[in-house]
Image (cartoon, rainbow, N blue to C red):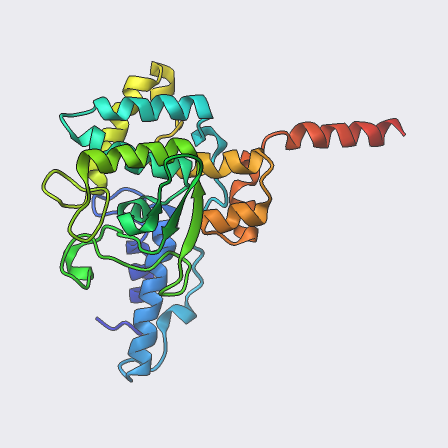
Length: 290
């Protein structure tokens, strides 16, 4: 196969737009795979295996990626509390072990992999008042072939941050109490991690997603279950950031706690900030009445 032929390169691009089972791949997935393919071909050029990157000769438009959070996925505080209250009843012990992890996603806006990497030394949990999480590691799930440790979960630095950079996240008393209770009941793993299975292993994404879906069915109405509302555990993070912004917390502070840049924060969560439409309508009405 001659990768220099535009036809072959276009076939490769077409291949990354579908999943293994033949369905259309998500736009973010397509873009990420295209970046990987481009990097591999650039390496081939650098090592003199190819005279030029064939992708440069192809006019190909990647699928458009949605730029913001869908407001329909964002739960309000009452709905979030109902979901979290339903989690401990799922399974024999799995729900109880995951309750604190899901709570960190909502009350501290942690990404799932950040919550999975949380250790006891990262937690300042006073008996009263607000606590503090020092987020320094993430444990994303990947195929064993692509991790340094040969395990499905590898300890890595934070997303969009330098290797050893940390992030400080103040946490409200309700989350402090949840984490203290979790530690009293389950202790920590050998490396200090808070959240793991009864056998000490990290929870797989399929395991905690399964618990989440059962919690949705227990806490939501039938109409809500089939809706996008909190369809994924990650939507708890979206709900947290949306809540902070709507509470009037400055965007700079929200961005720092959530691990975003301010411009990305406002672009991604613009549709989740309540009251903008009413304010805009009022200004337009004032202008029309002049």
